[in-house]
Image 1 (cartoon, rainbow, N blue to C red):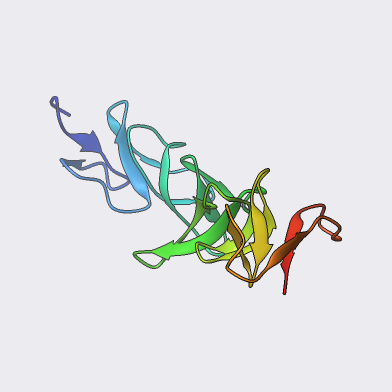
Image 2: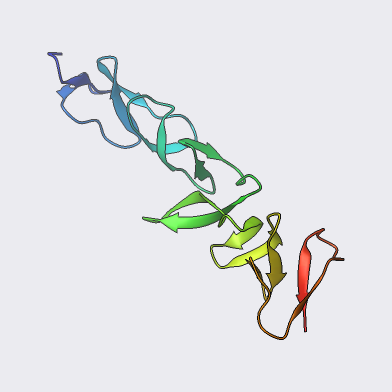
Length: 131
Protein backbone atom coordinates (compact mmCIF):
# COMPACT_ATOMS: atom_id res chain seq x y z
CA UNK A 1 0.00 0.00 0.00
CA UNK A 2 1.08 3.57 -0.53
CA UNK A 3 1.86 5.84 2.41
CA UNK A 4 -1.20 6.64 4.54
CA UNK A 5 -3.03 3.42 3.57
CA UNK A 6 -3.20 0.07 5.35
CA UNK A 7 -3.67 -3.48 4.11
CA UNK A 8 -6.86 -5.02 5.53
CA UNK A 9 -7.87 -8.70 5.84
CA UNK A 10 -9.39 -8.61 2.31
CA UNK A 11 -5.94 -7.65 0.94
CA UNK A 12 -7.31 -4.21 0.08
CA UNK A 13 -5.55 -0.94 0.85
CA UNK A 14 -7.75 1.33 3.00
CA UNK A 15 -7.17 4.73 4.57
CA UNK A 16 -9.15 3.80 7.70
CA UNK A 17 -9.36 0.38 9.34
CA UNK A 18 -12.65 -0.89 10.80
CA UNK A 19 -13.03 -1.16 14.62
CA UNK A 20 -11.57 -2.94 16.51
CA UNK A 21 -8.57 -2.57 14.24
CA UNK A 22 -6.01 0.18 13.82
CA UNK A 23 -3.73 1.08 10.95
CA UNK A 24 -0.32 0.09 12.32
CA UNK A 25 2.95 -0.57 10.48
CA UNK A 26 1.21 -0.70 7.08
CA UNK A 27 -1.56 -3.13 8.00
CA UNK A 28 -4.93 -3.18 9.74
CA UNK A 29 -4.08 -4.74 13.09
CA UNK A 30 -6.44 -5.81 15.87
CA UNK A 31 -6.42 -3.72 19.02
CA UNK A 32 -5.39 -5.60 22.18
CA UNK A 33 -7.85 -8.35 23.19
CA UNK A 34 -9.61 -6.18 25.79
CA UNK A 35 -9.56 -2.98 23.69
CA UNK A 36 -12.52 -2.09 21.51
CA UNK A 37 -10.84 0.99 20.04
CA UNK A 38 -7.18 2.01 20.14
CA UNK A 39 -5.02 4.84 18.87
CA UNK A 40 -1.37 5.04 17.72
CA UNK A 41 -0.68 1.36 18.50
CA UNK A 42 -2.70 -1.79 19.30
CA UNK A 43 -2.22 -1.45 23.07
CA UNK A 44 -3.07 2.24 23.50
CA UNK A 45 -6.78 1.74 24.23
CA UNK A 46 -9.41 4.47 24.10
CA UNK A 47 -12.40 2.19 24.82
CA UNK A 48 -12.77 -1.35 26.13
CA UNK A 49 -14.71 -4.49 25.34
CA UNK A 50 -17.35 -6.06 27.59
CA UNK A 51 -16.99 -5.43 31.30
CA UNK A 52 -13.46 -4.01 31.13
CA UNK A 53 -12.75 -0.47 32.38
CA UNK A 54 -10.40 2.02 30.76
CA UNK A 55 -7.55 3.10 33.05
CA UNK A 56 -4.54 5.01 31.71
CA UNK A 57 -5.14 3.71 28.15
CA UNK A 58 -5.29 0.10 29.35
CA UNK A 59 -8.40 -2.06 29.84
CA UNK A 60 -8.61 -3.63 33.30
CA UNK A 61 -11.13 -5.70 35.26
CA UNK A 62 -11.45 -3.41 38.30
CA UNK A 63 -10.49 0.20 38.91
CA UNK A 64 -7.69 0.71 41.46
CA UNK A 65 -8.32 2.21 44.90
CA UNK A 66 -8.80 5.94 44.58
CA UNK A 67 -10.83 5.59 41.37
CA UNK A 68 -14.49 4.87 40.62
CA UNK A 69 -16.24 3.56 37.51
CA UNK A 70 -17.99 6.15 35.36
CA UNK A 71 -19.44 5.99 31.86
CA UNK A 72 -18.42 8.07 28.87
CA UNK A 73 -19.92 7.43 25.42
CA UNK A 74 -21.25 4.06 26.70
CA UNK A 75 -17.74 2.96 27.77
CA UNK A 76 -16.72 2.28 31.36
CA UNK A 77 -13.76 4.34 32.52
CA UNK A 78 -11.86 4.64 35.81
CA UNK A 79 -12.19 8.19 37.10
CA UNK A 80 -10.06 9.53 39.95
CA UNK A 81 -11.87 10.19 43.24
CA UNK A 82 -12.18 13.80 44.43
CA UNK A 83 -9.01 14.99 46.17
CA UNK A 84 -10.70 14.88 49.59
CA UNK A 85 -11.53 11.14 49.21
CA UNK A 86 -9.18 8.18 49.21
CA UNK A 87 -11.98 5.71 48.42
CA UNK A 88 -15.20 6.61 46.60
CA UNK A 89 -18.00 5.13 44.53
CA UNK A 90 -18.74 8.35 42.59
CA UNK A 91 -17.68 11.99 42.46
CA UNK A 92 -20.22 12.74 45.21
CA UNK A 93 -20.00 9.63 47.39
CA UNK A 94 -16.88 9.02 49.50
CA UNK A 95 -16.34 6.09 51.84
CA UNK A 96 -12.92 7.10 53.19
CA UNK A 97 -11.35 10.54 53.55
CA UNK A 98 -7.90 11.84 52.79
CA UNK A 99 -5.82 13.16 55.72
CA UNK A 100 -7.13 16.41 57.24
CA UNK A 101 -10.66 15.84 55.92
CA UNK A 102 -13.69 14.67 57.92
CA UNK A 103 -16.46 12.31 56.84
CA UNK A 104 -20.09 13.41 56.95
CA UNK A 105 -23.09 12.08 54.99
CA UNK A 106 -21.02 10.13 52.44
CA UNK A 107 -18.59 12.93 51.63
CA UNK A 108 -15.39 14.43 53.04
CA UNK A 109 -15.10 18.02 54.21
CA UNK A 110 -12.27 20.23 55.39
CA UNK A 111 -14.37 21.58 58.31
CA UNK A 112 -17.33 20.44 60.38
CA UNK A 113 -20.75 21.90 59.63
CA UNK A 114 -22.11 24.31 62.27
CA UNK A 115 -23.20 22.57 65.52
CA UNK A 116 -21.12 19.44 64.77
CA UNK A 117 -17.89 18.11 66.26
CA UNK A 118 -15.24 15.58 65.20
CA UNK A 119 -15.18 12.04 66.55
CA UNK A 120 -11.66 10.76 65.79
CA UNK A 121 -12.58 7.10 66.30
CA UNK A 122 -14.09 5.28 63.34
CA UNK A 123 -13.81 1.93 61.59
CA UNK A 124 -12.29 3.45 58.43
CA UNK A 125 -9.54 5.23 60.38
CA UNK A 126 -10.95 8.59 59.22
CA UNK A 127 -12.44 11.36 61.31
CA UNK A 128 -16.22 11.32 61.41
CA UNK A 129 -18.49 14.26 62.16
CA UNK A 130 -21.01 13.70 64.94
CA UNK A 131 -23.98 15.88 65.97
